[in-house]
Figure 1 (tube, rainbow, N blue to C red):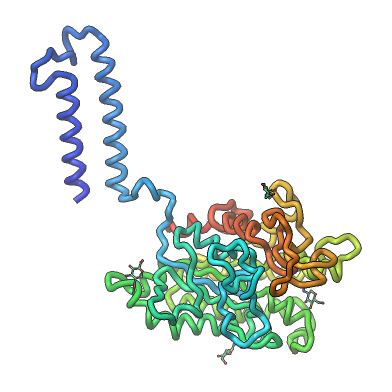
Figure 2 (spheres, helix red, strand yellow; figure 1 turned 90 degrees about the vertical axis):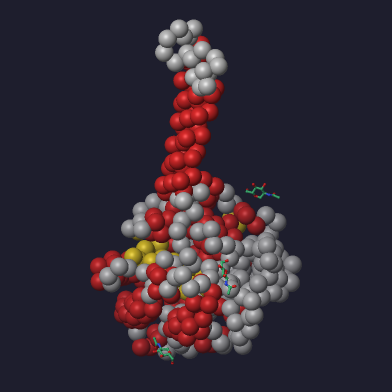
Length: 413
Ligand SMILES: *[C@@H]1O[C@H](CO)[C@@H](O)[C@H](O)[C@H]1NC(C)=O
Ligand SMILES: *[C@@H]1O[C@H](CO)[C@@H](O)[C@H](O)[C@H]1NC(C)=O
Ligand SMILES: *[C@@H]1O[C@H](CO)[C@@H](O)[C@H](O)[C@H]1NC(C)=O
Ligand SMILES: *[C@@H]1O[C@H](CO)[C@@H](O)[C@H](O)[C@H]1NC(C)=O
């Protein structure tokens, strides 16, 4: 079809050139070879080059089948998100739990207002969705609603959730990682064909989708580092605990692979020793990141990076990317002004020392004036501005940000 169109266009162009130069239908003298006074030949050459350029553009467009306007778009069907409060779009809103953020001032800068996101604006998953051209990925809790369409993917993330089932139990209900995967397997996959149309199989659809997982912070922050969870008693040494987490996480990622996932974006743990709440308790001397907590994140991350390399070797046809969120965030924290931040250890929303002694609660009037200057939105979560920067690093960053390639390159495979 496009070849036929191309042929017609080329023919048309040739006719036009001939008409314009007077070589056809010979009503004017033809300057192409003999008796040329000079200038018309130059004009002819210019004209020919312009036409040549136009034809080549049309030809490239026809051959590669890419529309010029969205040459930036990558070929991806959907994104499926697994995680905790860093990516939760409001899945806990209807659960019985203390871990929810569906009240103002959360969402103060978000187009849809307060949604349950623990942020002033968009999460890392939202920004990634924008970059992929998929827009906002619907929350799992909304997908059962009439008329909802999850052909762009589903976000299963849940505040207070972890890799382990028990993580966050003290807050109440939540979707641990195993439950998030079960929700995909039991609730979404059986429904998917209706949404994606008959001309593509579910396997084909999932293989061309991005599976983004960012989980594990809470297994340290609210489980390992706190009683009454029994994890520290079972695993008194942090490396043994890390090994246990990785073992469970590998089984979970393999389960996603068995369901048909092929393209994975696996986030490292963030430097959680830098959250304002903890600096205000443990880092008061210099108001700097608490390294004994960051060390736990680094320990887990180095195991995770090795795991990603192994999974790439062992699971045929799968591509796992390791997103170095830890160093990406440390780079911003260490060179904050380069990234437009004036504040890296203080919460935008909250009050007291580092705005962290009084938390960002419902209608607390303590919100900073210029939110884009703050790395942290509240005492625990990064701001929209931070999320936008790190998501871009995952999408088109260099090897230091994302290994062994970036998301954009992954999706072109
Ligand atoms: C979590 O709980 C589910 C359901 O009870 C169970 O199938 C799964 O094996 C548990 N996962 C872990 C890591 O203990
Ligand atoms: C869902 O949206 C996609 C893309 O916008 C569309 O092709 C599909 O028909 C929709 N499915 C339903 C069930 O509405
Ligand atoms: C921060 O401090 C709280 C309160 O002591 C503690 O429970 C939590 O584990 C710490 N979290 C991190 C990430 O350091
Ligand atoms: C907020 O801060 C950003 C970055 O420093 C700056 O560009 C912007 O003008 C500020 N906005 C207001 C309203 O002060």
